[in-house]
Image (cartoon, rainbow, N blue to C red):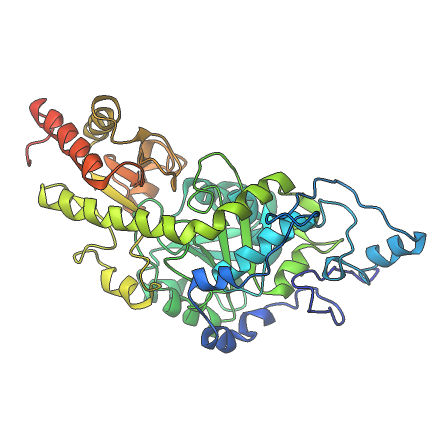
Length: 449
């Protein structure tokens, strides 16, 4: 078999030496201590990223919308396909491989998560599936959290076993002993969980979970979609961080996108011409989408702080009204102290909260009044929008799970997930919530108010 060539691209001042193909599990121990010691506030890290100016001196970068790129000498093409020349030296072939505008967004994502490299994809699920397929081969084993986004759960439960002979053991990641026992030495390749679980808002002990996995030679992949800026999994020991950029990072509910953040050796291997999942499966981000996102990331820190501030205020007030509220910022949350111990300072505890109405009927009545009677928010899936979004998770974003799986994950029939927005004044929105709850009480569907 011919030698596999990859293109190194991460930063222009880092020249590839030899093969960039992923060497087993070695990257899980590379320079982790150095990363910890040099970490800075995510906002400061983003501000330090090289600013790309426009072609004619514009303060915003130009959009490189080309699908293909020309060369001046015919020999250059063969040198690029052999891996000798690549984006690290400003040589581009085809935008499914690499695109300058998308690479700039990748630099921003790497800075945000404190990783060596990042590659942006067409969706969050594209990022997740590409990482899993790159790191776990046929016959491999994954240990994953029971509480996951429904699409990820379906991928692990149904698609990967059928298509790839990859099996998964689901565990309660708050039970470290259960996690350790589920990892089969020499067989388990990957530990997968969400930093803050969807939709139950359980907080994963990233440092301890990473330690347990690494002691057994297992790679740690963390979905940080619920907590950008709030939690930095790579700083806490995770090897790879994935995102659905469609959510908080985009902030506009108008873009579908994802990202893989991790070691350069991993990302380069995923772009391998012969065996890279990003290269061969083609989950390519459009350059125009990358440009839009690169203009939004600089104010992500301001948006996250307001999302989180309002979520904490609303959760505190809702609890006082007698509602069953789940929010990591409340002191009675099981992982409140844990999150407080490693969350990035001044970013709060996340922009989502849950209200458990116990039955789907009561949940639907609450959402009906919140949207149609008082305009507190919208009944819609997704999160991170500037308006509040609400959904009954069991019958929507977690509907891929059966009743037993939802029970194990802690998802009740009446669990309402709320992504708290920041438009309007806080008191204006709170008044709308109180009025909706009062109407629910008048109808006899809520008796604790």
